[in-house]
Length: 210
Image 1 (tube, one colour):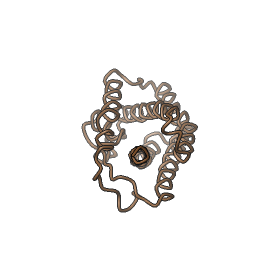
Image 2 (spheres, one colour):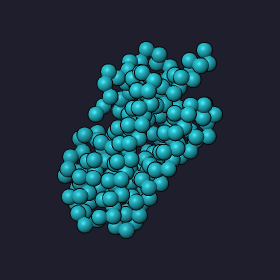
Image 3 (cartoon, one colour):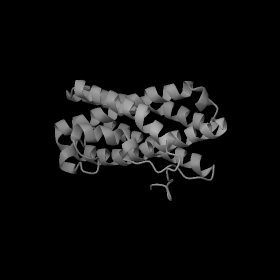
Image 4 (cartoon, one colour):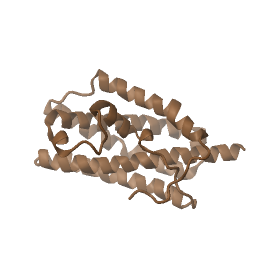
């Protein structure tokens, strides 16, 4: 019984991370395209965002391999489990897909999007640190290896956005954004993920997102 509950927890955790890493790198691809168009001479920042995109794609592939190595598919979670999805929806009032190039290229909106990415990564650093202290997670060497890679990569994802915003005179996260971050974190941790854990009949993906 305890073994089944433990493996259910791993399934839920890895499925939620796989979804968020996928949404992360596909969203960053759009941000990177806008950055190259809006600020073509910002070579260092473009390189940092490109690295961030590549890292998120690699993290996604690690979680994909985690499931493939065990011969099963991830749980079919959706954008209600997506951190950046929730953040974009609450701050911009629309989905990530509904943010068109005009929205992203307007300077204040672009700064806002950079703040949301930065805050998501700072939250990710805190979450990974907590998971690596968890006895339950440490019992799964495969997940520990993945989270160690994420732990190593995360600082290079947060700081370039913070420094670029400061350099450009864009303000750092305001009260509304900070409160939204807290709201999303606890909504996921205390409500959404426990519901997913208890949804024993939850379907699994048929194919991995590409």
